[in-house]
Amino acid sequence: MAAIRSSVSALGALVMLTAGCSASGPSQDARPSSNACVSTVTRDALPIWARTGFSGDGSGVPHVFSEHGDIIAVLFNYPPVASADPDVTNKILWISRLPQQPMRSLTIGAVLHGTTTSVVREIVGGAGPSSVNLPKAGCWHLTLSWSGHSDAITLRFT
Image 1 (cartoon, one colour):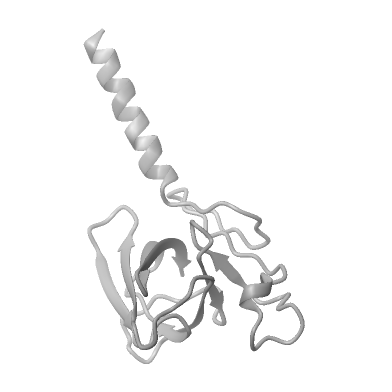
Image 2 (cartoon, rainbow, N blue to C red):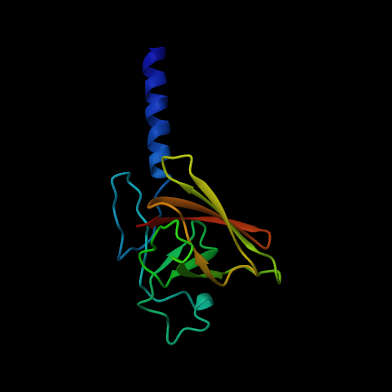
């Protein structure tokens, strides 16, 4: 009986880990992968709080909501491309729903799903325009910290 409980616990943990590399919400461009990672990208209208600088409601622009909905990644290069070449970059506009403190950086801790590969990127000045480059293709879980806030996004880099 103890062996069965142990197996059930291990299976439950595996399911939780696999489910941790997906995002929820509406999707027009969800990309399934072999490791069950799905980046939920939508081209729907941006929320009102994220429309500054866009003409109209921002419809058609690919974007991803964070897990708690406190920040959006607008993907001007979709899908994002992984590369170790520093000249290959992905333009991402980070839009925070929460107030920001001037000149506080947005720190991105990125972990490649299923590996020990991790990198840290710092966006000086906080949420806003950026170039984000990650070294390998795959499902990346990004932990975001800015102005005393934190949230996370999962993105697939090709």
